[in-house]
Length: 371
Ligand SMILES: Nc1ncnc2c1ncn2[C@@H]1O[C@H](COP(=O)(O)OP(=O)(O)OP(=O)(O)O)[C@@H](O)[C@H]1O
Image (cartoon, rainbow, N blue to C red):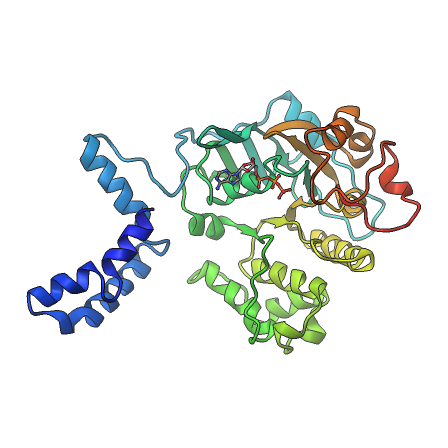
């Protein structure tokens, strides 16, 4: 709302112009707005609505304002992990995969979440969630529609106001702005891919370089490595509009990788892919894991999740329902009930329903299994 009000005041023909004309300075509008834009981009690249709102609150109440952009936990200690998280870390399972060489079982986690909670009015979208991401692992985050998966990713990346602690490679991200989290080593993709359709793949990915402007972003040769790892080298100079859905997903991943993330959050990268494209994506993600990147994967494609994840966490109604290896999750009755229970059975992505725990592996049609 604050953004809308500010826009209404500053827009052409709006209140600001009217006031300028009244004092005879109407011609200065373009110059003043241009200068204001430069100042905002330099000093507060995420915009002025948040700080203005915070200032308004401070003036109105005479109390310290809460940062409207994010995160209000003041705890700065990253939990070393309780017994449950320790167990979950130790359960990390590496497949018999020659590429999979980088998980440091028992080492310091790449990311550590503790008591992360997100409230939207009366809705507790994420409720006290905590787990670790072991370094170099692919960790799946699954759950029925509306379970809170994307909201948890938003909390980790600073897009949703949250309480609790988010630790990244030994430093706490709690309370920091989104772009600072990116600079600290966090990358993410979104369900809506949003490529620049008339730019080439290379140009689209180059946009990601700005994420770590001024310090250690990847150069041309590293970009080429990213293209090779993701199998995009052949389409490097093609326009984004000419790509398949699978390639578009990979370009969005490449764009996130251009910021050199330690931890990469992927939000439904197999969305819109058919079975063979999904398998192909899985191979590319495994290749990415072998480079040392830690991945948190939100996905409804159970075939993909079960085949590439080292560890899986299940959310239901915002709470952590279960954690374990793919085999443990598949045989967990509480997980099956959460997916097949009456409250979620109408979910739009629930295309294949089979009550047997082995349904994912034995889908007779051999097709993609979405839950
Ligand atoms: N900006 C918001 N304002 C209010 N409620 C929200 C907002 N974003 C999400 N929610 C609510 O939070 C809950 C969790 O939503 P979220 O999108 O995180 O679920 P999800 O597990 O990612 O679902 P899906 O698998 O369908 O993407 C839902 O009840 C949703 O309606």
